[in-house]
Image (cartoon, rainbow, N blue to C red; front, side, top):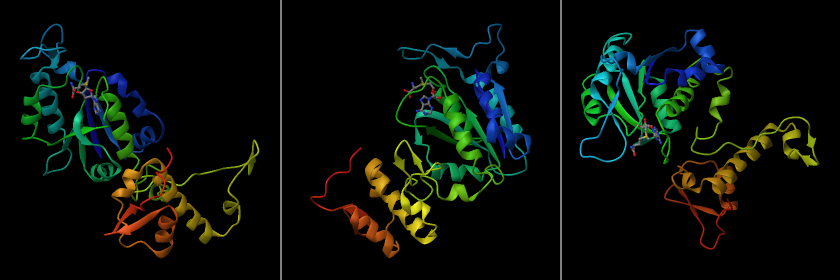
Length: 269
Ligand code: SAM
């Protein structure tokens, strides 16, 4: 996969040289390029921003350096046909999720346009649609100073789904959000630490029972921490053991969705 990132702070993306993503680049799995937006300016001061039309606080990123940079990125597209996907990090975008990470992980070419200040002149986003499949994407409902932190998160989430990046692909299967639930709690040695014992079932060697316990813990944790995920969880075709686990936690399955039983205490947390 080729990834291009355009930013006024290319150094901000340096962590993408480390750890599994850095290794994926060395191994040729990820061909990642970071571009300095200022190198696409033409004035002496390398200006990338100007005051907003209509007044108001802050500055807006000028369209021309962006169009120059993004044209260069589009022309670098490997292979033929189709448009690269251009992710525009924005608190006003669709929410970044594990499902979107999976969707992006099958693309041949991703580009990221890191906004700063009050964001990028809207006409760039419209114009870019001629060259890219444009997707404004938000990391969450809060405001960052720039798109770089969002890009670090998204590139890591997408990059680790590429074949060969994570050593044991099994570990991707059971993770939080891979099946609409949070992951079960995990433990390592020693079996007793500061008087706290690892759940006995994990030491039993009974893999069937361990799998059942882990599944129950997934439901319990999701119910406690993210009941919103359970509300949209597809429980229509669940095996009996899973249905029982949900019932024990105070849920009935109605029209294929877990519904908290009347009079059941709200989950803590
Ligand atoms: N004025 C913009 C608004 O209210 O929608 C916020 C601009 S923010 C200070 C500057 C840049 O940070 C944005 O252009 C975007 O690239 C990035 N950014 C801020 N919050 C973000 C979020 N939640 N997700 C993704 N990118 C974000």
